[in-house]
Length: 356
Image 1: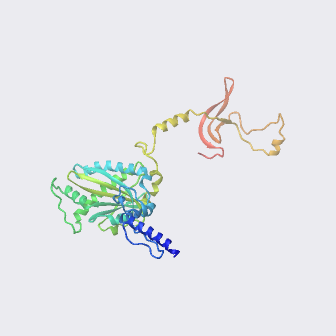
Image 2: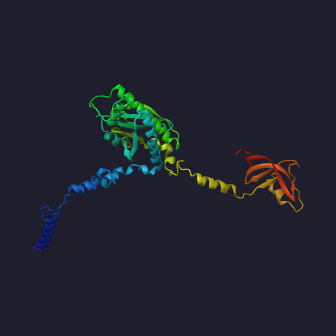
């Protein structure tokens, strides 16, 4: 039949495809095969492949899902603030615990608030704090290792002993009070870290042990997460600080500037150079005796020899102006055969008489 060569060609192609993919089966009656994806290909498509460890950029569908997140690197000053916080905490926690404390910044990432709440390892304490000047809130998480370490240190525990952890029980009043003291120290250092950029007061609000009661933003909202590692010789733990982007919105313009020295974006050398150059700039100054308003008809009738009467006397002050701004006032006279003005008053006044 005429259809036999076409059918045999399709069967040949189906057989070659099955041999290549390692799967049997062919097309019958002119049908087509559906290629089955392997698990690695599915993971790569979804973005769960080699990038699952978080060291690589997301790809596939996960890249589309996370595309709405704002990368913290767009706020370069934020990293400077947290570096300053680490230095301040190293000193304040040494004074607080009377022990050798080392604070290190592990990483700064952008996360969704709901994903972060679901990823908090329990048991832990969550501190909700208020940024009073920004009129918004933030979240601080202290893990169980840090809780037991700070309780052990403040209550005189010996070094080198294994930490005794009793899981499955609520934290006692003593533990909550000691952790609250630690949180207040960290919040004071955070206020000091933001001071050179924008003065702000972080005020302790409440302590929670259930993440559901520490909800300060919508689950889909983006936030900045800073993970701090605190080591006290053979003890220590982690403190995580989460600040929603809505909280940082009042100082977003300040966080966008690049860091130039300890003055947070200011270059004193350039400022000095600019000031010196401005002082050497030439500026034209006009001496104005008086101003009168006349009609256009009178101006058109002026002829050589016409006189314009000014409303001034010989001892009246003359205004020295740069553009429309009055800089000085003085008396007119002569010096070495030239008309001169002796400055009497220093004033900055616009031509309309408004003070600048």
